[in-house]
Length: 271
Image 1 (cartoon, rainbow, N blue to C red):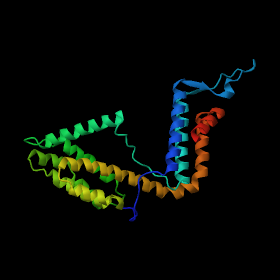
Image 2: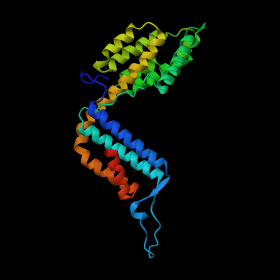
Image 3: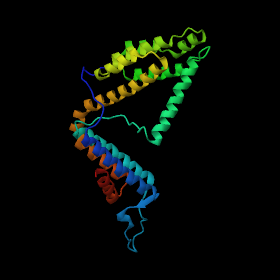
Image 4: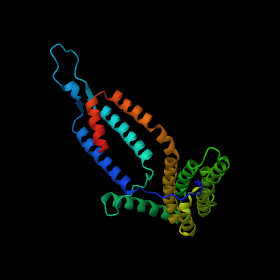
C-alpha cells in the first residue's frame, strides 16, 4: 500500500553489508564447528571433578546450541535495526555466472515456456495460469490493512479461481483482462518508487511476460513493505532495546546453561 507518499530504496549501506557479511562468516564458522561434534561439554563441567562429586558432567546438545544461535541471530538483527537507521532488507540475487544462478534461470525459463505453450495450445490450457492468479490474489491480500475490506472483497471477487475455472471450461476466460486488473490493483498498493515498474507492466504486450514481471514487481513490493515495517518499528525497538537484549540473553542462558560457551558464541557472532 502507498506509504504516505515517501520514496523507498531497497538495499543496505556499505556498513550494513559489511556487518551482515561478518555476521554470516561468523555463523558459518560456528556451524562448521557445531557439525563436527554432536555435543560439547561446558568448560565448567569438563573440569576434573573431585572424588566427592556425584553430579554428571553437563552436556550441551547440538539442538541447544542451535537454539542459542538463533536467539543470538535475532538479538543481533534487532540491535542492527535499532542502531543503524540506514538498515534495509534487499533481495538475495544469485550471481548470473554462478551454478545456482544458471540452474535457477533454466528452471524458471522452462516453467514460463511451458505456460506459454499451454496458453497457445488449441484449445488453450489454463490450469497453470489459474494457479498463478490464485497465488497473486493471496499476495495482494497480504498487502491490505484490516480496514481494507472493500478492496479485499473486490480482489476475492475478481480473482475467484472457481469462477475463472468455470469460465475456462466454456472458453470464456479473459486472461489479459485479469492481468490488467492485477496491474491496476498493484498500482494502488505499491510505493511511489514502483510507479515506473507499473507503467512498464502496462506497456508489456505478451501475456506470459506480463505474468512473469507481475511476480517480479510483487517481490519488490513485499520487500518495500518489509522495509516500511522496519522503519515503523524502529522507534519502538530503540526504546525497548536494552530490556529486549537483557531478556533474550537470559533466555539463551536458560536454554544453554553453559556460561563460558555462550559468551564465546556471543563474541564470535559479534565480531
